[in-house]
Length: 465
Picture 1 (cartoon, rainbow, N blue to C red):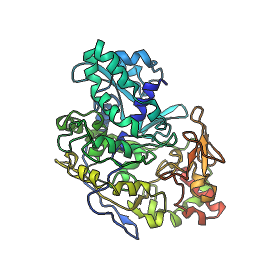
Picture 2: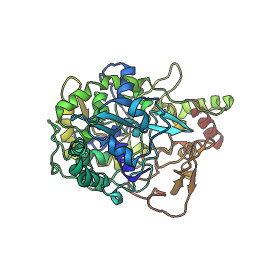
Picture 3: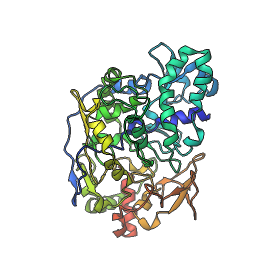
Picture 4: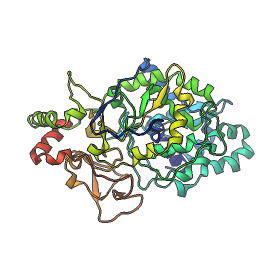
């Protein structure tokens, strides 16, 4: 993939998970027991319209002019979404839309973050764990350079259509680099973009209006199909109120003002309806029914209090688990709660107003997520630090340094996760280093108390969810 196209993908893959750096304007809560999250009213919508808007809509209105894009990008021949027209020529995670000044532009879509090809098929709603934020700083901003050197001189109309995207790139690309490929810098992207936006009008400010803290906090991308069960969004449950407002935050990359945001937001009741209609893919291999039945009993007795039960009478408790219990890497929730300027920005912004307001609420810990389709969502934990389900249930098997093949990936159906190779030392970009802040693989050691047979049985059961 060409460098410019790769950068465009990498910058956007985080956007639907955006605002992971915010938590609320109250002081952080320090509970000692799990806390149930109450439900919030949600908009209704038309799933078919939501799907159409996600895959062909103009929720971003600035991008690379199609006439320029076709010069440096190869025509996509997969057309996983079976789209027509110019959309059939670009990858599934791009759209071709018309800019306000009537230029056809190529824009990234939500599927850059929430779509991934698995075994030759596109799985809509699966978090993308192949994106690469680890080389953005070195890449600098060649797209903007092209826009300045060529478009502004020879194609001023096309340049005007691309300018909002170029402007955002100039502000963010140098300061959102991760230590390894496969993790997401959503929280950092949110921090950088919000610092340049007026909270009420959403208009771009050339200089940051907020102090920007240092550090990139890595996250994994949760599966979309889990959202139908959840009463709050994001790993620490801080996204409360209207889910549609959070889902449409991708628009902040290039939004002109709050009037554009209102128009985009009007479609996201439909988008939420589509997301709620998604079901996880079924495990493609044979499972041992007797072993899975044994595993269900072990799961109910040891895991269901936090993660819920499954089947026709299943129940999901929507519990926030305190840091003192879960003990996984704390940088994400601590990073959220240590930035009160961004908390205040969101909870006093356009997103917190209107008939469908959203808000951010702090918490010292993380949600125990639903486990539907968990077999396909590796790697595990909120930072993607554990490569397989087997290692998740036995902390002694978690590698300190490990890498996987992004060029020719293969799935380990026995351990359940992407095949990986343990290494004896770190190497930036290619080796996941769990000794770094934010990348730690500790915590969630509840499976350690199980016997080897019980762990095998639980894994077999989890394959059936």
